[in-house]
Image (tube, rainbow, N blue to C red; front, top):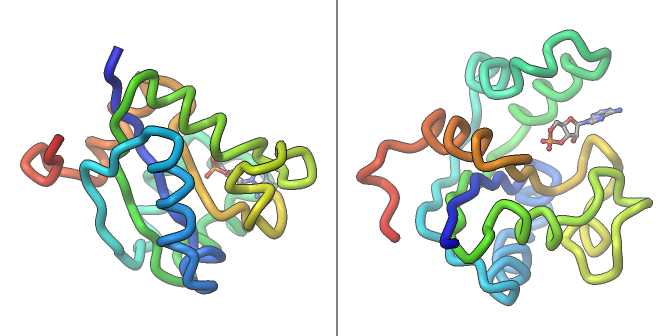
Length: 139
Ligand code: CMP
């Protein structure tokens, strides 16, 4: 079924001017960018977005990184979009990411891993709603 997922192009990637190259990987995989905005996340936004990781040892580092430079927030739409997006992103740890995936091509470390994607349809709905108003999404 046609599904939507939430994507973030992270600071390590925007710093290296990789937005277009990453979007090309998504589009080549059949994902359609139906909403997109570049923002500098506030600490409050990043803490809220990553609330489920608040007890992890890397939480402070994660918030620091995600607020260190602009990010590109996106809604991607397509057949089986959540799983398809996860496949083209590759493993969280770039050392384990498959050939041709965004993280294999561009990521620098497990923290500076270029992209975020929702891990389920439920997360996608929550994450999209966290950053986008319905009228900003044009399918
Ligand atoms: P993301 O999908 O955005 O969701 C949580 C993020 O935490 C994850 O991507 C990683 O970038 C980050 N992360 C996971 N493990 C570590 C770690 N050991 N050190 C720093 N960041 C991490």
